[in-house]
Image (cartoon, rainbow, N blue to C red):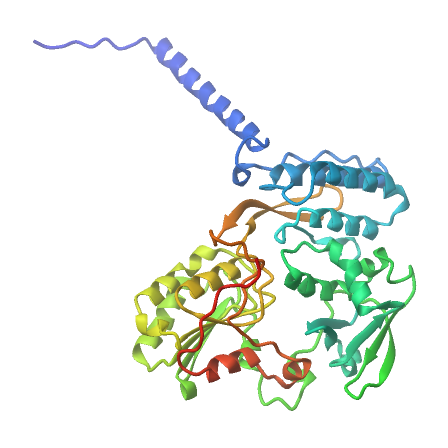
Amino acid sequence: MELAFSRPPRSRILVVALRLLTLTLLLGVVGLGLTQTALLPAVWRLPNPPPLTNAGTTRDDRWRADLDYFASQTTRLHANAFSQVSRREFNQSVQRLRERIPTMQDYEIVVEMMRLVAMFGDGHTKIFGYESVGFHTFPIQLEWFGRNLYVVNATVDYSDLIGMRVERINNHTVQSAYKAVTPLISHYNEYGLRRIGSRYLTTPEILKAVGILPEGGLAEYELVDAQGEHHLIYLQPINGGSHFLNLEQINPALNAMPIYLQHRDQNYWFEYLADSQTIYFQYNSAYEMPDLPFEEFTRRLFAVADSRPVNRLIVDLRFNEGGYPTIFKSFIDGLRTRPALREPDHLFAIIGNETFSAGVWHSVALHDLGAILIGEPTSGRPNSFGQVQRLYLPYSGIGVQYSTRYWRLIEDADPVAVMPDIYAEPTIQDYLAGQDVALGAALSLPAHASHGALTSDQ
């Protein structure tokens, strides 16, 4: 018996197709609407379209539009904007700034927005791109060594200042000036404050906004040289793109650039040090290099490890401020299959105050595999926000980076930083002489060195 099937009328097929199309469009609209609400997890939310700015509106109106957009979007898009500050306190601070805009200069508004962002207590969430509204720098660069702040770099005209200790900025001691800028800094710990604070202390607009420099006046830095002589230096702002010196220009007596500074422009690289039978692997950024994918790089590194005598494997993370932590998996997998490289006296990781975000992930992963951590505490925190997204303010064009997830790498503790098992903190003299005390410590460490706790800070 042959079964006969009747075909639905063409009009019915068209009706069903239209209904399916309508349903698809409706779901798309609903989905788009949900991404612009706080109903979905933060990683799926999208910024609302910025308000249209009228070229005929006043400067104050445009800044208020930027402020309102910033405040509404960051608090909605962030994974947990009010974990460290109350909504009421934040909104009151926004309103006070809104009222003051007519009496403020552009750079002052930006600095106060930095203060608002810092209230979230999230080192990943910050303002960037504010150079476009007229921010500058002074022709020196500063860095903390211990409790003291030193000039570590300068333009050629001010190279004779390098190595001097900063005693005072205008009428403020270094400590009081540092205290004035720290409320503007998004951070997780004191190490992040020190890292960023030293940069803010050479930014004229920030120093003026917090009352350290007078409007229109010169910056007076009191410096102390190695012989204890005091020098009063008056500095004019320069553009941020101005040329600063490298260490070989600062110290011509160096035979070569220290190995840890040789390839800062590469995300990852390694070298086999035959004299000590060491593989030195510097991982500066957790981003793929287009001309050398990380998996291929890892294959090359382990090919050397498998074919030559290796007494030590040193992973230098001190400049790694983040990226995509998952690309490190091929290296970790390679270590797991090579137990000889993970002996207590074979595997080391160098960390420092610039180690942040994915760099912290990698230091924890290496520590879990038995690596001895050498160097200084990280500015990143193991349990912290991350997975950032960005939005841009419609009037000024300033960018805002915000976190969409909270990551917990350590379940039974909440350390403020990854702490080294062995502290190796350079002095200003070490730095200028090209002495890498962290790498030196790893190369000279005796067998079966102690492998301590990840951190002593809770």
